[in-house]
Length: 291
Image (cartoon, rainbow, N blue to C red):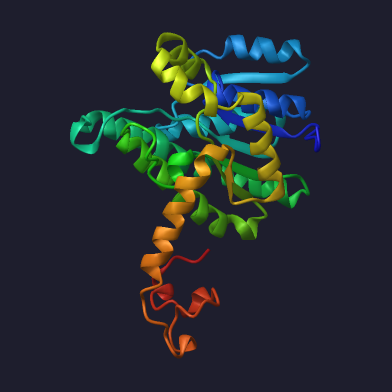
């Protein structure tokens, strides 16, 4: 392990199974104490991680319910007195295009995948700020997807999920800006196919799916290692799957091509968008609440 997190406290949401479980194991292997939050019972994962020497607790948590997230934060502080890393990982998926998606299902997904990330950031940022002030590590890892990097042309439409993962990128970038002064690093974890329990079951049940997915799917442990390495290196976006590269680069080039048709302003310093990042020049800054 290239960097340990001995005695750090890591909270992993959606940690009972899948990628979250792999993140929790990675944290344990780096020496961290881990709080797993999940709607499902995480007992089996807790027992497995304790069996390899981990100090692990769990709590049933609905990330779409802010009061529940606050209780998670309070329980973690009551148990260990601090929080150093929030793995903001809980999420769900819905298949289908926008016209085919039930509005109720879309609302539920957005409440978990987007509002849930916000809830985690809002509830844990003050605790992470205290950890940073005390000289400890302080990070937020938001789990996005290759869907955060563009609309994957090789994946059947799961459009509202893709929307939520684009939103995860926006949340990560704004959190990085908003929390930088508090000493909190923020990264977006953007894996492609990962061999979680669900993906393995899809592969096992459908030879056609197996042929399409298996050659490109990554091992959860390897993905979790890449996530923590990128987080600790301060990387904004942590893509993990080489199969994501081509369409993501094409998306980035397409965006830049459209942006570059805008005329260059001869005197950029004459307006607030001069590239300096001086927010005091924003014409509505006086309307914003004091920090």
